[in-house]
Image 1 (cartoon, one colour):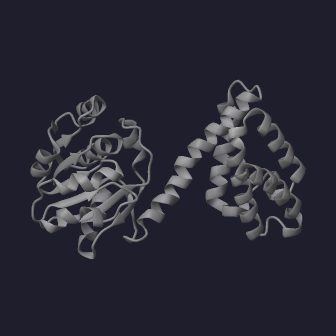
Image 2 (cartoon, helix red, strand yellow):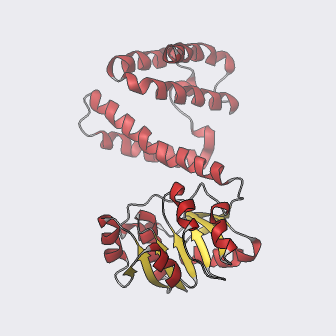
Length: 288
């Protein structure tokens, strides 16, 4: 197919390069920042860097829109589209509604979101095989969407229009918040005098992630799942003294962990009472 990419950011440039590797011709890409220009030169060296409107005109078969979620609507409202042209965006939270101006001009629309984190380098290409894509598409366009995902080395997960925000919220909770949690843990280890926190966290977190994906809530360990209220109280006391900004997040996650442990039968409600009392006290102080 003749392909154009609007938005040569971390996602767009990499997906464009992957489509080129699969035998498609990426004829044009847009990107105004120096970083985008560098990505086009590095990942799409045979592709012309032009304006978004010129990309839309050149991409006679597939136009891939990879810009921030809130920018898709205003961008699409001003672009020229072609009848029969496939227009896909890579947003996780948005569905087909945001592409209505393209559909009104005869384009065929779909949402194609890779459930992967990107650095915008060639290394990302090696991570694409096996990646799941959250796809929203009309029934008639599903065979083409399946082919595109296969060309990218991935597998499709069909998501309804109404469920796109929930789908994306789940990914943000799992991936974006994971980065915050890991860095919070690393910072607290540094506060405790650990010089190389990555050496401590690496094996532990890899095992925890593997177990969570394999066994679900049965993988829960630690003081909350055991109902060790005294240990949690000491955690909170020291966190309050050293890193008070971390206390609300610790309390929120500990409370949610307790809820899940109780529901999974890992923690008896009677054993959780004192623990929940310990967690309720700092929560009330934060609210006050």
